[in-house]
Image (cartoon, rainbow, N blue to C red):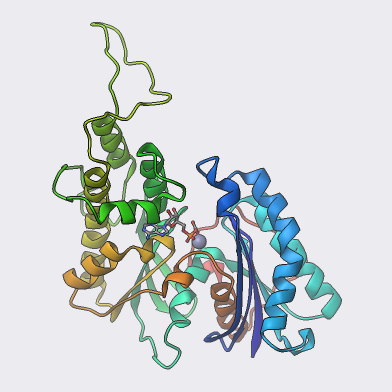
Length: 350
Ligand code: KG4
Ligand code: ZN
């Protein structure tokens, strides 16, 4: 079964054709990173405009590269949310147009479910036995999910404030590194000493929730010039904090990454034990991080799996793969389907 996937929830315009939820026959990603880099983050208006400009060519190329005619497709899967509304609407309207003119079924996909199914694309020959624990770590989300079957999700916890990727991006900006912060902090950290600074380790409690804003604030206090506060007066807000000249950016990057990874690994490994899962799966942009991968493997006695680098960050192959399982479950969406800027991954998403 051939499914066309379309993804436009954030700053990547992507389209892909996947056979039976496993085999990628084409995978096109038009990234807007250069467009947003000068703003240090994703600029929503610019993102939607860039999606409008790119989407037609991206979808056409995905079908072309697949070496099939459009008629051969069995269904069209598109990201319905969560994400930026303006960006989501571009993909959704394009997919609806295709579904309307061709009469092919439309499948609205939760972007987080897409990240989960990137794991089914990686080793098509290898079966994954449920239950599994999934750690989704991206720019917008940090979710710990127990998956007991296709489309069956139980959310065990998640971030209470900043997402893991968001923390990487904010600390990267603070340290003057280029956007996105994650890969640049990882690169810088390789030259640093992770024990040089002792930053707080997120929430150390019985829950499966995370909190990274305290970590970000601790880094900020450590590395920026602190204003002098007169006795009895409140601290003025730091608008453009200046980096101290005596800090080592490499050491800060390594110590920050170590603190964040420690929190993710500790709770994921504990949840895996408590719920008796067969494997730990990681997905989303931050799962590209080598320190996270190595530490999770070292500290868990279960198999740990993650997608190849190009499937960790946003792509449409994962949307097509999730679409396949939705299609197999007999689910179809109508042309009235709306987009959802926030949409937790629960079984009702199915
Ligand atoms: O999954 P993704 O492409 O988009 C969202 O759905 O948000 O994730 C993007 C996030 C960014 O915050 C980026 O800094 C982070 O993933 N990221 C990384 C790495 N590569 C990307 N974080 C840490 N280490 C990396 N190697
Ligand atoms: Zn994503």
